[in-house]
Length: 507
Image (cartoon, rainbow, N blue to C red; front, side, top):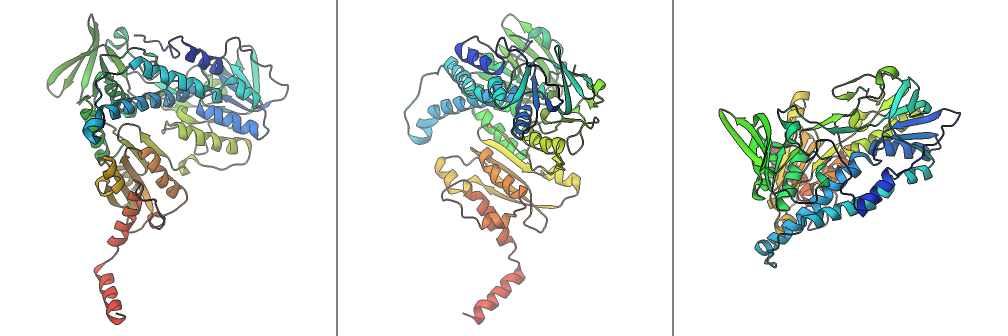
């Protein structure tokens, strides 16, 4: 195993195509124009790519700087490879369970892990053309490959090139956070930045962290045939999500053979002849577990180092670049977007941050990040998705809520599919139909949460969703059922007496 990230491996035809797009060999950086750039974008992940293409499409002079791989984490080591592997794992699981669930054919073959990983690499390479240096050059963007560093409040240097700007955007993203665990560096480990280089299946994968990345990859590798053990210092998985949602995800992980060790503290790691051994305490007990691969999934750290931020007058801290609600830094010329400055480290947030930054930086936009309605999804089986306030957040903000829960067991399509482990939970501002937050746990929760996000973004109430005809049978009918429950709850004893009188008079 390697502790230094080697993001593009093995050296096969698919990764060769990937590199030809996102970091082409022999790339020659352009000569900056005499005029200032309207916008210099540092970082070519989702946030930077959207900012650069959007500004160039509006006619601005734009420079885009990337020191490693265009496409950033999402394309290379995040959303794309992980969802490719998760899709393969789901297909393997469906094949294994088809007989017991639906009377389907029995499957005894263990599957080919190497083929599943190669498929991921092929699809990643296919998608990489959209984020390629050549494509962005074609869009009118000056693409610079190399390390960017501020040399003045209005200048960035990339090698021997000096880029003067009217406005700049820092979009350098984040990296896997590695906790200071004794013995970890010496033993070696994987993160999400290196785990997708595997070509052979680990016999026993140890996972440190039961957050979204840890849970997703633990379940995927278990379904692909690895023994998996997850260790987390907390008392449950998915600490930011609804506790009931987390319990369903935990049960699904255990059903797939994943061992969950919560309350794991005082970790020590040692490398032995037969694998990697993790020592930990749980309460008053001392335990240990050994595997042949170790994945660290303990959160993310913003990339703020060696950018010359002090020279530019840009403030930054442990949580990243400090920005105001309009995404502007302490230097009025410089904005910061995406994972490097946001508490919500999601690709879709980076995308919308970029759209806000274009309007605010180049025009007279007054868009505020706090007004964005941000959904998120953990892509386990079932998926767990949320948007808006959780009950805990509502309590901290002093927002009283009413909660309606529709179990998937009450939704015909879920029953017919045999996927009833889940629910739709709607939080309404007390006494009204105004949506305060929504949680969905279902096989396609990431798609289902979009209906709630749409409603909340546009000020639509639950009653408006209830008036919308949903196709039958679909899992999305759960929204209509929630609206029906809310309407029935408003039928007070007084209202019932009035209706009784109405029907007696006009009966």
